[in-house]
Amino acid sequence: MITATHIRGLIAAALTLLLAACASAGGVNVMGDVGRPDGAPGASADAGGNSGSGDDASKNPDGSPNLSKIMTIAFADARWDEGRVPKGQQCSALGGKGSTPALSVNGIPKGAATVTASYQAASGENSGRGDMGVIGYKANGLENMLLSSVPGETGSVPNAKVVSSAKGSSGYLPPCRKGAAYTVTVQALNGSGRALATKTVSIGKL
Image 1: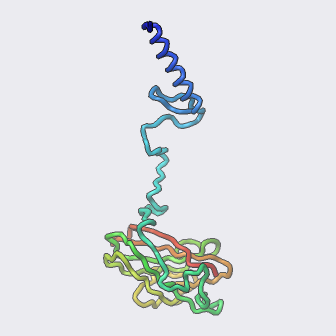
Image 2 (image 1 turned 90 degrees about the vertical axis):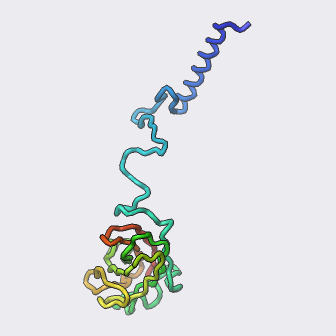
Image 3 (image 1 turned 90 degrees about the horizontal axis):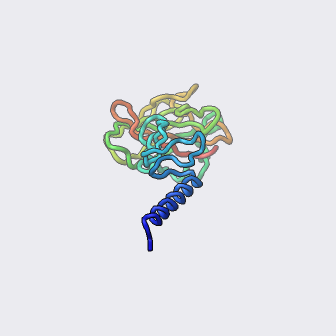
């Protein structure tokens, strides 16, 4: 015959086993922290695991939304899609007459007034964003755009505008350091100049 004493004993044994299991796993049960290592953060009701550091994976470093899975960039000229800067697209100092690659930009966020293309080396000299020049294009609310190729080392560019020039040059400075890799950062900006989306892709190695 099972008595009340037996039932109380079974309940106590079950609770002991439950607490021991939680402690060995360093886990948390409904009674609070159990076996939490020294210095580890306490239990939180935040299911997302927010550490309170302020980091937001949905944002780019400049504060614009990270829409890399929405805004896409593709080369409109297949010569640029081979991992290397095409022959002749280097700077004049290296015997070239380079122009920017024509880019197809799709998924531009609503409200974009301008799309800019900032060119830079991936590291070393001219590696800061836009250090090789920034070219701007009117978006006019378009969701998809072709950023036409513009000539390098000149401030006169058709169907576009030189937002800023490379140091010591006019407009876009084509790749000018052998062995270096180069990138372009495309931004969709609203009428106030705030970034709605930002994405950087490789344009190849010289």
